[in-house]
Image 1 (cartoon, chains in turn brown, cyan, red):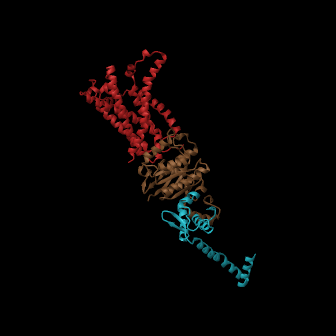
Image 2 (cartoon, rainbow over the protein chains, first blue to last red):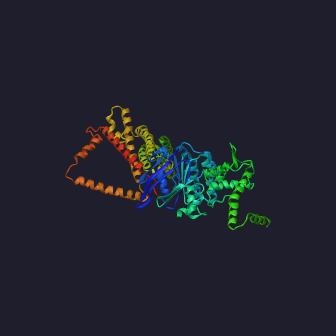
Image 3 (cartoon, one colour):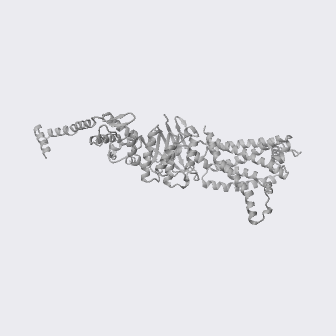
Amino acid sequence: MSVLEVSHISKSFGSKNVLQDVSLTFEENKIYGLLGRNGAGKSTLLNIITNRIFPDTGEVKIDSENVNDNDAKLGLMFLMSEVNLYPNGSTLNQIIADTELIYGSFDYAFAKKLAQKFELDLTSKFGKLSTGYNSIFKLILALSVPVKFVLLDEPVLGLDANHREMFYSELIQSYTDHPRTFIISTHLIEEVANLISDVIVLDEGRTMLDQPVEEVLAKTHSVVGPETDVTAYTKG
Amino acid sequence: MQFQFNSSEPIYRQVAEQIEDAIAAGGFEEGQQIPSTTEISKEFHINPATVLKGMNIAVAKNLIEKRRGLGMFVSQGARQRIVAEKKDSFFETFVVGLVKEAQNLGISESELLALIKRGYEQ
Amino acid sequence: MKTNKITKYLFKKQVVILGEMYLVTFAAIYILPLILSLITGTLHDYSFVDILRTSPITGFFGFFMFVIATLSYENFKFLIQNGISRKTFFEAQITVYGLFLLIGNSINLLYNYFVYIPMTHKTTFNIFMAAYAKFFHNGLVAVLFNFIFSALILAFVTLVGMTIGSFLSLFSKTWQRILLVATPVIGGVTLIYLVNALETSSLKMTWVADLGSFILGYDRSGIYNPFPMIITLLLICIGLLLIIRYLFSKKQLKQE
């Protein structure tokens, strides 16, 4: 069992406190929804978890081992986000080959199948992709690398309704074939409401909610009645 | 299968109810295979564990059964059991309340039976 | 653990650039003059031998190492995306540059010993040959130490490039620009001030001169001792490595 622990993370940019004493635990094989408004600190938190940036205080651990500068632990996570960390001049095939080299394995068959479904040409250059296909390619990578924690930051950005549908279905297929932990950060709550098993809500850098969805739903009804969802609850 | 996900009920219970309703309405015949957890999960973007939880309720009620390596199938006599259960719950939710209300209004048993008969004749 | 894989990855990426550098150098030095003389009809003036004799191929390699060493952020981005630690990136990058130094230094010396000397009959093609080679009585030992000495100078140049590059990569683009403009200006002014102060000062800074001549291995005979210089370069390189390791550990993804 792998457990990802975030303990007492605080981070500020200049005078702005982006995260304030955030502590969370992510358990194996669950699908977490990381929800909150723009600027709530979701992306910053995911960047800190994956050691892309450093927290001011606090630490991130996998199985009680700090992930900072730790290949063995960092290699268990993959963060797909809006920022592009791939060379623009490389073809998608090259990026896949390099990714495979680093991780030691890669689900080629699945990646090829997805590329075909989404009609993504793997011989095109990364820098030439449209916003939608840029997201699709990075999602294909995220679903094909052999990691235990897949972190998706606004995964469906720039995808049309049809592609979004396809993505969620493929996510479930991939999850069923290889159960692992997903952390999906999004503001499109309705789309993931039934997909996630646990919900975390960040608001102004603080954890507002961290519970299984069922419990949240139970509370929601006693508070605001039917026809409402997590959104209504979180809006308070 | 149809899912109405705006209602207040937890999704896993809705999954169980949808399966039950589909069997009761003849959408799924006895002995017929029903969609797998993954298929339902992918179609409606529901967490597989949630779908499984709903399926397990139906399994516990002996409405569907797992055939190793093949999938989920509607059990023999499932429809009958559902109807029987619905009758039970009909008694609990309607008849018990009806009788109680009738007593409050001073309606006797024979009067009530006459009323019910009138209802059937309409 | 993953250092081998990353070394392989970086080598694969960067050796292409090294190859391109040699190709461009070759084209610029040999082919371009040929084409120009063809166009201008002065082919009889074109001398492959002359160009070969005077080509600054050895200097190009040092310059190339300096430039490529300043660039590390692109690779950092790709590696941190794929869960590679800063420590592993550092180790792999140092290994790759070490291999490059072996390649480039070998090409340089092969060129000097087998092209330059036979053609020009001059043996003083670098600092080592000019000042230290005669220190060794055995010719082969001199070549070996020439290799070590040249490699250390190239390593120094490369590590300075890495230090500057990884220091700058800690800052945003705006700050990088400010630093790039301000540092030479401030540094230059300081240097001029220092030189003036030293010249006008009645105090003779004899210890500076003494230290300098010790490091250079100065000897009145004109045959300098290379060992103080080799050890000094080695110590400086180790110091730079420690600084670069620290700077690498501070690398972060920048807000874009």
